[in-house]
Amino acid sequence: MKIQGIRRMQYKQGKQYNQPWQHLPLSYAFILVIVFFCSFLFAQNFEDNNKAELETQVAILCYHDFSDGGSATETTILTDKFQKQLTELKRAGVHFLTLEEFKQWKLEGAEIPNKSVLITIDDGWSSVYKEAYPILLKEDIPFTLFIYSNYLNRGGRSLSKNQLLTMLDHKASLGSHSHTHPLPPFIKEQQSSLDEQAFDAFIKQEFKVSKDKLEQMSKRNIDTYAYPGGYFQSEMFTIAEEAGYQLMFSVEPDFVTVHSANKTLPRFIIHGNNDNHFRTIIRTFNEMGKKREKNQLILSPEPESFTSLTPELKMDLSMIEGIQMNSIKLEILGLGPAKLDVDYQNKIASWKSTRRLYQKTVKAKVSWVQGEEAKSLLWTFYISDKP
Ligand SMILES: [Zn+2]
Image (cartoon, rainbow, N blue to C red):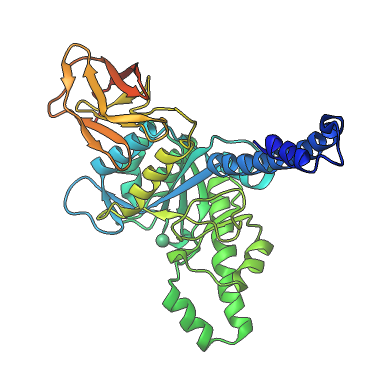
C-alpha cells in the first residue's frame, strides 16, 4: 500500500522521473529502513511483554498456627484446609522451594521455575509439628520455620527443641523471627522512651541473640529474618546486616520477583478465616504464561493434568480469531454432550460436573466454528481421588 502510494506520487511528479522505477530502489531502501525500525520496535515490545509474563514470581506463604478442629482465626488455620491449599498449589503447577533454593535464586541469580512457592511458618507453635509437618512430609514439600528464640522449648503450646530438630532433619529450614517477638506498638514505645543508643541495643539484641541461640541449637547458619508483625524500620537494616542477615521478610502481601528488595521481601499471610490472599496467589499463577498465542485455546484443567472427582472444565477461546461462540460444543467421551455455560464477553465456556466421575482418564472433545471452518480438539486429563 505504502509502496503504491509513493509510486503514484512519483508518477504525478513524473516530469522529474521519466522512468520512475529507476529511482525505486532508493524509495524501497527508505521504506525498508522504516520497516526495519518498526519491526525492531515491535520485536522489542513483544519481547518485553513476554518477559513480563514469564518473569519468575515467588509467592511466599506465611502460616502461623494449625488446628484439627474448632474454629479458624486469622492466625489459626484448620488442618484440612491447609491440606487442600497445598493440593491446589500443586494443581496450579507450582514448584515448592527450599529456603536454600530461594536464597540461591535471590542472591546468586540461580534459575528456578517461573511459578514458585516458599512455605513459611512463623512463631513456633507445637501444632506445626503435630498438624502441618505430617502433611508437608507426606506431600514432600519443603518449608521454612521462622522461630522466635525466646519461645522455643517453653512447654505449653511452644515447639520443643526435639520437635524442631526432627523437622530440620527432614523438610524444614530455619530462620529467625527475633528473640522476644516485639510487636510494632512495643517497638514504637521503646523508641520514644529509650535514648538512641539504648534503642539500638534493644533492636540489636532481637537480631543477634536470636541468631546466636538458633545457630547454637540447630548447628545451622541463620541468615534470614522475618520481622515480627511484619514491622520494620530502616534503622534495622544496618543492624541486621551487621549481625549477618542476608534476607529479611515482611508481610506486605505481594509476589517476590528478582527485583524485590532483599531487606523487605513481601509475604502473603494466609489467614485461617479468609481466603483472599490464597485466592490471589492461585489466580495469579493460573494466569501466568497464558498470554497467549494467537489461535491458542486455553484449557483448564490443563491437558494431561490431574483434577478433582467433580471437575470443572474451562475453555478460554478469547485468542481464537473469528470464533463463533454459539458454535462451541463440549462432549465428554462416554458421557455425551455437556451443557456449557458461555461467557460471551470474555469468550469463556465452562462446565462443572454435578456428580463425581468414575473414570480415571477423561477425554473431552471441544468443537467450534472459526470463520467458516469447523474445528475440534480432543483433550485428556485425569481424575485424582485425593482430596
Ligand atoms: Zn510472629
